[in-house]
Image 1 (cartoon, rainbow, N blue to C red):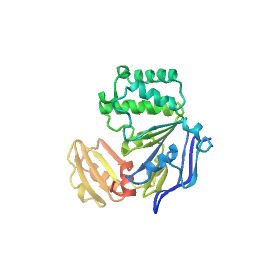
Image 2 (cartoon, rainbow, N blue to C red):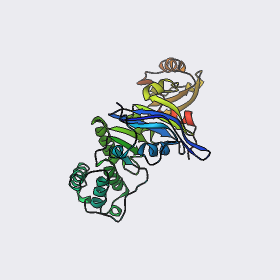
Image 3 (cartoon, rainbow, N blue to C red):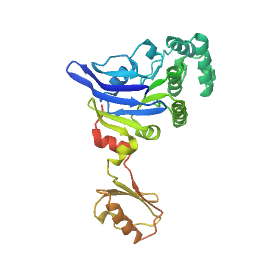
Image 4 (cartoon, rainbow, N blue to C red):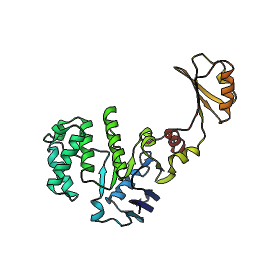
Length: 300
């Protein structure tokens, strides 16, 4: 039985529809991407999953059961906004939050020390949150979300405010949680993170799920419109090839935007008449390109 299932879930605020007939299923051992511009309905969806608000229609099931205090203990949440108390000791508040999730103080303390050691920040145990950098505050908030070993984890902009080294550290940790069978609902504006972590996605637009499914299948629905030509020598006349929209010079070749896929073969023949290519690739669309094409370039 799947850990998290939403069926025809809708939420209305007065005359405004925040979420409209959302269907979503997340497997154990999966990171599911929930995407959308600001105001699309992602946050409302996550709040309904967490039981902070209730849907007006439809159902949310956790391992086949409706929301209850029992289900609450299996949920973990990392919000986009930092919510730790700045002047309270890290150990005091993280252990308190773990106790709210049903852990004993002794088990919570053991788990906290283990996570601090994993992140190589054991010296933070007795420090206050305000004494840490923004990146390390994010690590502590991440620990608070997972300390009670939740089965279902909601991550909203999990890597916000982190430098590249710590982004990789947290990505590795999230992958380990996935490999240990956790069900993870993951929301972010960083499309490259979704491409790396997620197998299935939903893109929301104006409260509606507009694209859903396996990422690799979604990409097949969109045309390939970029070609990479690798060459150590200049190639003349690329702009004149039929179907070419734009040409960009790269350090070791060219990136060419095309109107249709068969233009790629014309480019290949044109280039090989002049030089030997070190690379030729018709690129699949990036998730960022698909997102912009689907919902437009406007954000909140």
